[in-house]
Image (cartoon, rainbow, N blue to C red; front, top):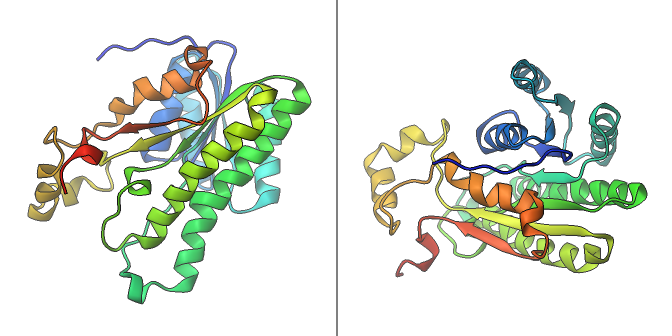
Amino acid sequence: MSLSADLSGKVALVTGASSGLGLHMARTLARAGAAVALAARRLERIEAEARALRAEGRRAVAVPLDVTDPRSVEEGLARARAALGTVTVLVNNAGIAHTDRALELPPATFRSVLATNLEGAFLVAQAAARAMIEAKVGGSIVNVASILGFRVAGRVAAYAASKAGLVRLTEALALEWARFGIRVNALAPGYIETDLNREFFASEAGKAMIARVPQRRLGRMEDLDGPLLLLASDASAYMTGTTIVVDGGHLVSSL
């Protein structure tokens, strides 16, 4: 698939950019012309990826950032601004999952999942929005939600709650920040193949899950490129408070 979008002049920050979807999204934005700050706790990994992008002629920096720590968030946004300029595209991708049955779900795990997936997204969005308003520029915030924010499965109570909350948070922030020229939207991926889940989806249990997807396949990370570039670019200038589902039809499959 060939996609093109011109993000020249945009400064993007992607959280959870050390691997998986976050790293892929950072690369996608950089190759579309944006200057990109790769943000994560694993500094060594994102520094290597930023160097690789610079070797391609892209503008990229690594920013240490823990989304659960307000001070780290402020410092991370400040580092990105000093190196590249005010962030005008934020991708809130950092997240953690769990596989606990609700009856055995430790309260600490529940709090940790919501602290990263929901509160963390809010803290980064808030800091980015304040910087955009101070600089008198608009921007686009893209929250990475999940189809589990709309339909549930077993052993993901905290994760599903965090992603449902993120969808509603997206709408609330879109309402409040529209007057500042800040758009807030979300992506809700279905099952996307990554290095972390590839082995599981090759198993019989994984194949059974794939069989329930109407397109009868897993999503590829590249399947998110079009929606991501749409929301990050001015092509979506009149879109805010929207969640784009990218799931091969999984949400509309029969129960």
